[in-house]
Structures are given as structure tokens and as C-alpha cells.
Amino acid sequence: MATANDIITGALRLLTVIASGEAVPADQAKDGLTALNQMIAGLKMDGIDLGLSTLTQAAVVAVLDEEVKALRYLLAVDLAPEFGMAPPLIVAQQAETGRITLQARHAVVEPMTLDPSLVCLPSQRRRW
Image 1 (cartoon, rainbow, N blue to C red):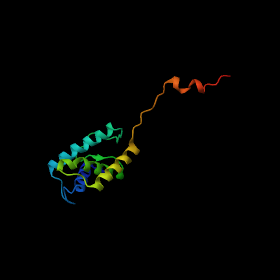
Image 2: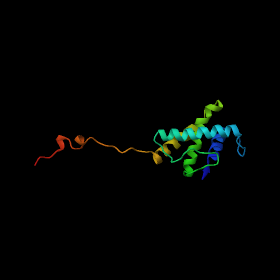
Image 3: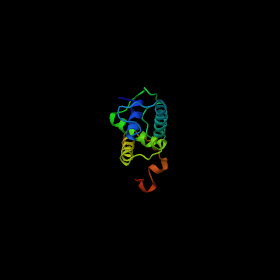
Image 4: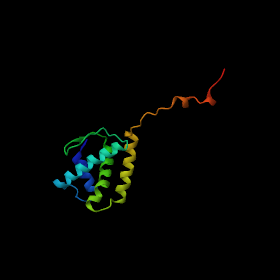
């Protein structure tokens, strides 16, 4: 299981803002956490409920490992403009693939209700 800080660090590494093994500066960690929480809230608004509430830096993100990868790439795409850059193409592609994966696994589908008059149309009724 990864922490919120692991996801933020991974996203910043994908953007080459920090090098491998380098610590994230406190201001960037705070901004990254804000962006991560906003991204998770946005996913929920889009019908992708990961079951996560507001995270802290040390909070364990209770999702599968491949979903952690998706969150890292999605966060990298969200953070790129803050650093005055466009995300690398491969990062954007992986983010889209990750979003599709998250949607397939966590999409909240509201139950559909039909008007009772549409359930059995007159042409489908049998008359004995």
C-alpha cells in the first residue's frame, strides 16, 4: 500500500520535477496533496468512487497497486501546468489508460427506473 506522499513523489518524478531518491520540498508536497485530494473529489464527481476521503501526507491510500500507478499518472497530468509544462505524451497516455481502468473498476452506476407504462407496451400485450 502506498501513502499519499508516495503518489505525489511518483507524480513529480514522472514530470522530472524531482530526481529519483530526492525528497519533495514541503511547499510542493503541500500543493501536491491539495491537487491529489481535488483530483480524487473530481473522480468521485465523474462517477468514479475510490472510497477515499480527504488524505493527509502520511495517509495510506487503500487501493490496488495498479490503481496507485493510475493515480500517479493522473496526478502528474494535473500538476504539469503548475510547473509550466505539458505532461510528456507517454504520461498523458498512461493517465488516460489509468482513468479507464479506474472507471471500469469503480464506476458508480445508478439504478435505472422505468415508467410502468413503458414496461409492457400495448403492442407487446397478449390478449387471450
